[in-house]
Length: 91
Image 1 (spheres, helix red, strand yellow):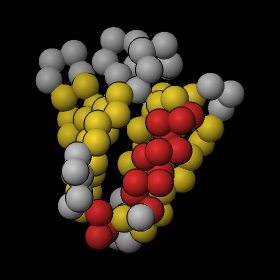
Image 2 (cartoon, rainbow, N blue to C red):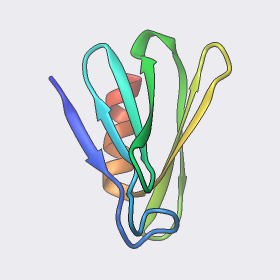
Image 3 (tube, rainbow, N blue to C red):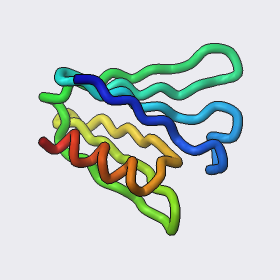
Image 4 (cartoon, rainbow, N blue to C red):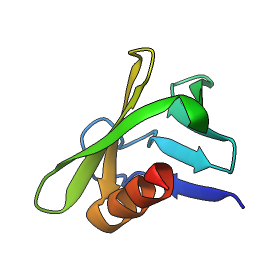
């Protein structure tokens, strides 16, 4: 099963090009859009060491750390989406 989450446009750094996360059974793909194109980071689910949230009043950032020490931060998701992302990734 595949899940897609998109950051809010009203958060810092996401006004024009919001962060996106796509989660499936094998991997997590993080998309960071740019003026032209995007950068993508693919993390195998088996390589995820921890998933934490940096939550504010309305929005939250998702911090994914791999067992190898790579750190990926996705900004500006609603708190409910961030909690759902965390639940999906720690299963």
